[in-house]
Amino acid sequence: MRQTLNFQQFLTIYKFIVEVVSLQYSIFFAGKGSDSVPEKALFTINILGLELKINSSIIVQWVIILLLALVSFLLTRNLKKRPDRKQSALEVVYTAIANLVHENMGEGYKNFVPYIGTLALFILLMNVSPLIGVKAPTEELSVTAGIALITFFMVQANAIGKIGVGKYVHGYFNPLAFIMPLNVLERIMLPISLSLRLFGNMSAGAIIMGIVYDKLTAIAWPAGLVIPVPFHFYFDFFDAVLQMIIFVMLTMVQIKIIAEH
Image (cartoon, rainbow, N blue to C red; front, side, top):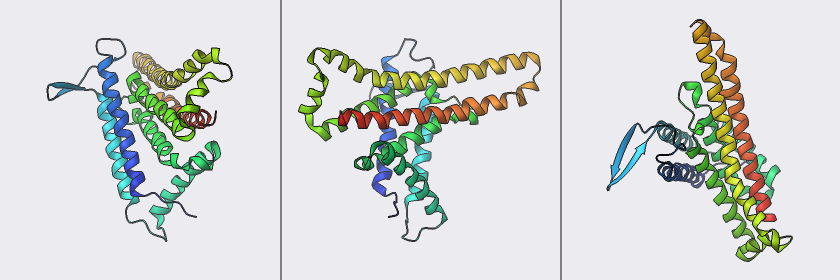
């Protein structure tokens, strides 16, 4: 049976991304005055006495949100039983994501297709944003931590909903009660490892590209127009796609394992 996107899934996409960015606001302010916020705010919005400091990463994310929302709305309206080329292309993408979820999580997890698809698109667009000359939001720990925490809460909520609170809590004491602290630590390490892995790889790529441009500029400015191209392809495209895949695959694995453990 042909699968199609509907308006409810469009709302799920929009709601998920807004929650990610909203969570990053709290992380941004919690790290005020520390090394966890490397980028200065571009401007400040005062709402009821609360100063919201907006940096370039927040702006880029909101642009991505609006882009995904607009594209999702345009592509999912007026769906037909006999799809045209636009709808056929959309359904190919959706079916690919659905198959990915089915193969890695099973038939019982098809309701995660909108979440996994949105997660993949959101991270991918952030990772490849340096290709248009802007800093990737995922080069900031607050951004990757926000996404990782959303995934962490999603994993725990799904497990509780699937097996119940009692069995969920009992899982921390398996196979023996005295290793409960290790089981708790294992759960806590999920958002830490997800956020640091994505942040570290994207930041490392940006640092290497900066070094490449500095050295080439010191040699001759024309060298900076051609030589960096393969580096951009690797760090801003290949590695960007790879890190998205790793994040999404680990998310799917964790959702399934914790719920069925």
